[in-house]
Amino acid sequence: MNPSPHSSRPFNPPPRLIDTRLSPPGYVPVTVTRGFPVSHLEAIEAVWAPEREQLVADLREHGETLESGHWDWRNKIARQPHWHTLVVVECDGQVQGIMAVENFLRPSRLSPSEWVLYLDYVEVAP
Image 1 (cartoon, rainbow, N blue to C red):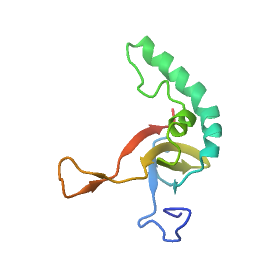
Image 2 (image 1 turned 180 degrees about the vertical axis):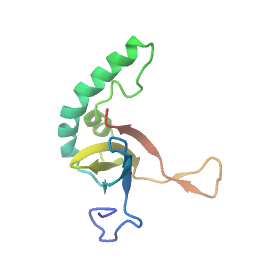
Image 3 (image 1 turned 90 degrees about the vertical axis):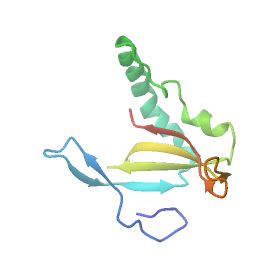
Image 4 (image 1 turned 45 degrees about the vertical axis):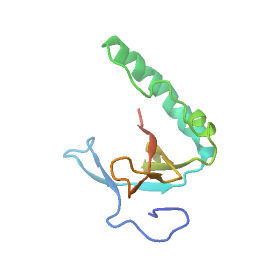
């Protein structure tokens, strides 16, 4: 597991998730990829879009909404090319979560002498 496709430095400790499908729930290894290729978003949307639409419908029946219900990751990244780096978490060959991190630091509003990294979008698999 590498923190970046360009780095051989391993995460310490290695990333993992708790799988609640196990009895009892237990940790499972995951892969975190920074710099996930935009070209792979088509495959994610092919799986996530129908499930996301079903989740939106299910929530609507209970008077709830899903903020990411209308999202399409291909459009989010296409708006401003090279503005974001995609980071994904995969487990058992399936993407479990994705986030778009800005490539540029911004000055902190709370601590003017500090810099912050913005996380613009984050979504877990529906």
